Length: 405
Image (cartoon, rainbow, N blue to C red; front, side, top):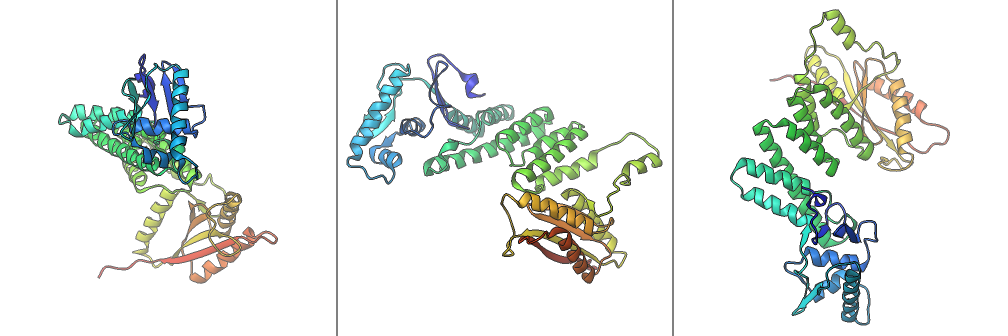
């Protein structure tokens, strides 16, 4: 259920999740494209969301005026309330006493029927928690998930009460998604699980909900779709926040690899598909973090037999003072230039991947500690241009194998 789907005649529709708006019979009363930071709007947000218990005069004055020095705070509040009532009447709402005062407590009128999305969202969650029938419980969880259309009053993130509510509602949303996923998994309803994961990813980005969609796609045998989703998600997370794949996504990637089945082919054809000879770049093998992880683990196992010397090196872009660069307009360009310098400075048998913003991991096979220093000099020579103040800081560890006693 969404607020738009619950539209009823002569019912005030209040959106608090993902934005703010008051709508009456299709007409926008407040919020939306209009100014969302006026005291009129803020007063309505406070009173409507707290309409059951009301808000005391002192609390309302504190929230509306904060630390502003006013000659007469009570008069200022009365003025805002009076003007707000006039605006609401002019907007076409029924002529009632919109803001009621009882013994120093202000209430939003109960005379106008209302649907508030945040209230409906929490109501569905409570119903799900109290329900014993699994099918009904799932239906309530799914209804709750679809009522949640984004962060609570996102324009009020600096306001303590709103930020506290936003955090509480997001925690409830996460709980609903996780519990609905578990029920769908038990019932093997992977079509609805796919829809749930897709919706959650759109509403709450960068929260790993894509792992739910990947699980559903894999369970439905749609492995290529799952792999594409994984690739797109890894690229999106990194471009948006510099984040590497989470444990959840890596687990789904491993599960995906276990389940992919190919058509029956001869070894020659299979080997031609596996071969990377089409990559004629003379430098190192640039791969994704999950692939790099697999290579690293394979090298560790190979070292149990051989006696190869293998090192792992982390290259980090630093500023003129030697501090890691985590933000900045030049970071993306410097990262690309470092990647090119690193790739051209290592051998084709070495692997590398981007780890974070301004960072690359390099796996140097059959290399000595002294060779690592030589490689670093080659990288610096290709990376440093003119009087450039930024540079690269290197961290090197040996990849060693300790035999069991």
